[in-house]
Length: 258
Image (cartoon, rainbow, N blue to C red; front, side, top):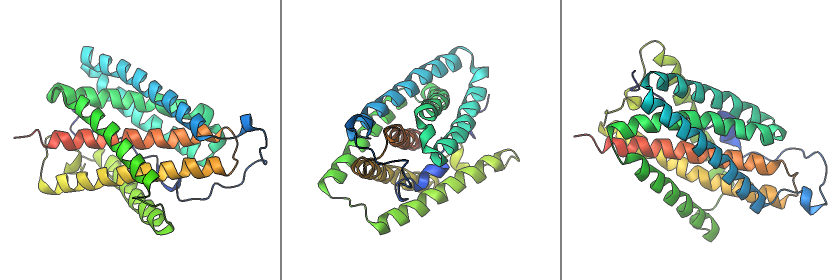
């Protein structure tokens, strides 16, 4: 089984414009507090989605450790499934209450498989990546709440183009891999200065994407949007966190090479 060309989890192609686009038309003006989107409700649903990711990751992790031949299939199934389901949720936000958990389950398959591969080669690396992901999330939340990083129109446009560029890079790389031409960036053990620099840039973009997610959730809650948007906001935040974790895992692995 060869995981050298495994790709990162996609940053949800359509979700790339999530924080920069307008919320779009709302079915109706919600007056009842229980039927409105709230920040607390979104946080709770984010917790649910992350719990699904962790639970399915544990299954995928154990599967690949006991039967490595199944690992590649689980990872590919998870990556493709998450991509397709993410597109559906991104274009049809009202499907998020069902689509969000589906995306979380598929991402769990991918995350568990790829984490097991890295952990077998670099023991202890997964814990480090998880710790850094949590630390970055709270650091970005602090920067957003204190105004150190302000979500302006220019910031949204720059981030949208940057994430779109990364998404195209992932997609082209995935297609190229079928022809044996996958970029060295995705090869485990390739720690060239170029790859390290590119990895750092992608980690930076993923980190700043959290700020866009926070802004989107807060603005959506303020605009009296329907309750299902809590799942949509949670979906976006979950996707960004998984993306950040995978790229941090890859970056840490580069520094483990001799």
